[in-house]
Image (tube, rainbow, N blue to C red):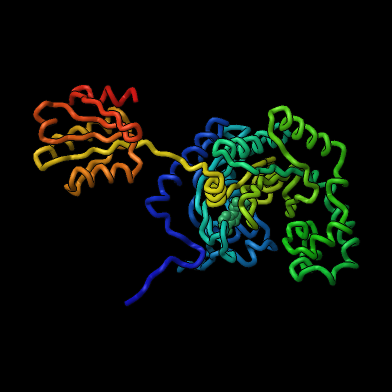
Length: 418
Ligand code: AMP
């Protein structure tokens, strides 16, 4: 017999987990909406070239991790491994800049990367995030960071650190990169193989390396890009920090935090949580003023962040920030009450908007009450022959055990104020 299992690095979301997922999704989207961001959803696959240009053809994602194929028509396609490039593509394709000089966009979507699976790192995973396209100003960077922070705070995530840096504007980069390359050339033999290549192609990305010996070389020898940024760049960064300070968002200036591609500039940031272990990044983001142009649009400044949903859920479990769901369980005692019970349940769902679950296994009263407890019902409603005759039900508050007799005709009103 075949023994089918999920593919390595993918997982099922079982019913017990889905409620929590939906709750997280709606809370993330509600907060992004509160900040004025509107949701966008792009297709699951796009042209491979979009990601090569949009993520960078020398990045790990593009060289090793994409699920790509050629379809029957010979088109090179890829399951999306990130969302900024597709959102930027949509922005250009639908001329969104003509509708509004500033587009605030948010997303909640699934991505695919062929990475080595481990805790907090899957091959299919979910991200939520936001992109503000159109403003070059530091208050926009601060808004994006504040949005990410507010979302994590709303889930009561503890041990959270916002790390922040500036890599300055694109003009200062060529001189800095040649300085960095020259400095590291004599240490090349001690770098890992990936960083040896990075040194030639894009030396800034060596800062992203997780290898301890590469980090030690950087710590002792590498000049930091922050020390090369211009006075204007510094002013931009100071304003971001001032706004964050005045709005009560704690952060650390981490001068090694960089984004290695040409179209990134100014602010880079990351939110980490110490409770996550080795994969401690909750989200990453920054300013990418050159991307829209790189993908064929006009020059439009932009800033955004992308956050892993699995990592958020892991951090929530560690912090016991589990979400609770109010639910009402309708107990039906005897075949003769099924019709009336179904009618009441339908009516209650319509009038109260609450989750109402009705017994359909015809179990004993004791077993039905146990079931109500198992699914964490806030209230149970008991409908038996006596209740049917007296045209009222018994409503039980599960935690306190208190019981109330409520006439059928008052039931909707009774629950509406609960
Ligand atoms: P990135 O798009 O690489 O900047 O990642 C942004 C965020 O997505 C990270 O901070 C993680 O929270 C999450 N993330 C990235 N890759 C994975 C993965 N393979 N599995 C789960 N979450 C991920």
